[in-house]
Image 1 (cartoon, rainbow, N blue to C red):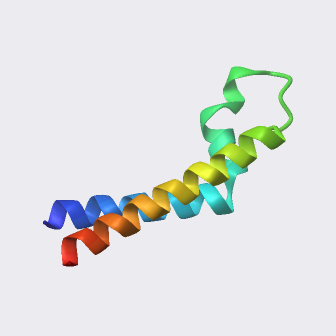
Image 2 (cartoon, one colour; image 1 turned 45 degrees about the vertical axis):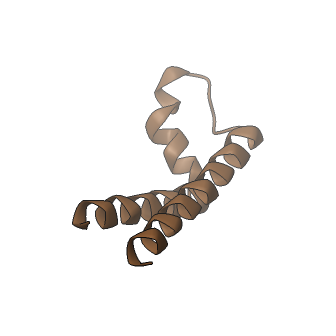
Amino acid sequence: MAGSIFLAVIFLIFGFWMITVPWLLWWITESWRSKDAEGPSDLYIRISKITGVLFMIFGALNIVDIFV
């Protein structure tokens, strides 16, 4: 049970991070692949935010499932 709560909280934190600062995620994971890249594309930012929302929903549903 403690591992499940920990994993759910990790999903919530990572999802929040993806929603609030998607450019930082791009900089850490993708910027090194191109020397001419100036920043993430609009599509990358949108997909990161959508994925962050899904991560937060998944984390919240896991917490609800644990306590219900």
